[in-house]
Image (tube, rainbow, N blue to C red):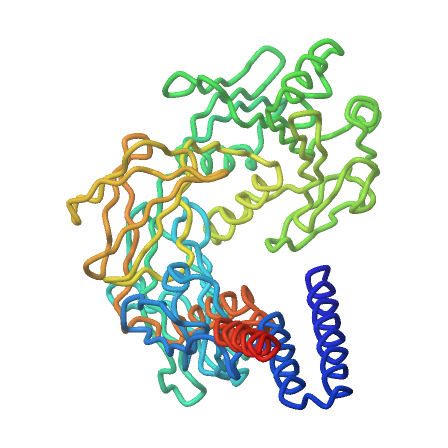
Length: 512
């Protein structure tokens, strides 16, 4: 602003001086000298004003998505048609104003995890702009339909993987008439879950305990299991290998109520240190114990009360009266939880799940997985592979990122070794895949990994949506107002030359 004020003041002074001098020469009737003064003043004013040429500086370059990054010398703005460019292509370009009209319709987006632990449900969601009735199918590698959903708007299908393996499923979206709208691969890596180390302490046997034992053992968990069968009889199941650090403690209410005050304090001390505790509340008998020790307000429930969560279960005789009970928060599957310093305590107020072990084993396993999730059982991972920002394609720049890695990472198929580039909380490397399919990755710490590279023709509607999003983000970096003031300045030397010639000619006339 100060510069603009100084320029305006200078122009005003030049104009005033020029008019005053021209007036003096005109009063003397020296018309040629008057004209020379006016020319000199005008030239000096134009020299100081910095006159600019009409139009914008440089040119507008129209980008070709299939071409490599162009030379931008002399380019003031970019233009692109259609869906735009991929994020990796925009990242290679400086921020310049962009001329682009976002197309309408014709896209969809797939949302699903690229990696999954065995025992977890795989969910594939499709978001689409078309709200008409459609059908989404999930197919196994042999073409068998393993999941299907019908409806309008967003669609989702679920599937429980039976094995820990790497698969390429297929998804197909059909309209109401059965005509294929879109289809393509759905790569998925199913990892073997980290071993769950469970200590179980129970005051009375039951069919529910036996079913829970079988579910945990079937999932590969390491069990240290003790059940009191009588006054002096305890059935003990020792772990198959050394249990270094239990990550879950399961007890029933009867066992806790029989403990002495010192034993309860010691138990809660372990929980405070970070060990999750799950209490099976079906055989609770003393509400006062729970209120005094863990602040859990229990009230008697109606005899034979049943719930659907989603299985039909019998509610425990004693449960909190509402979803919110002091420090405790409940859920639909009758699990109340509260934090206990670094740990967490959960109260399971349901029983009779053993009735579903034969008729609905998968539903029972999923319900128990939900219970364990509420408990907050964490299995820390040293390395976490992050999903790519956009679909990897052959010949296109792919950025692979992970947490907990450093040093070098190898890509055997590409005969390439890269060094992880550290960021705030992750490390990344960039590669250019040569073909579609699984791209093997080997890291000294993380071990073997594979990232799927899609074929150029896979999911064109999804690729279009990603390009539109990336192009919109790039356009937001440099608004159109950045063009203001980019017109080129007219060369200043001609005005200086005219000013100098006018003054020399005026001096010559004065000296004659």
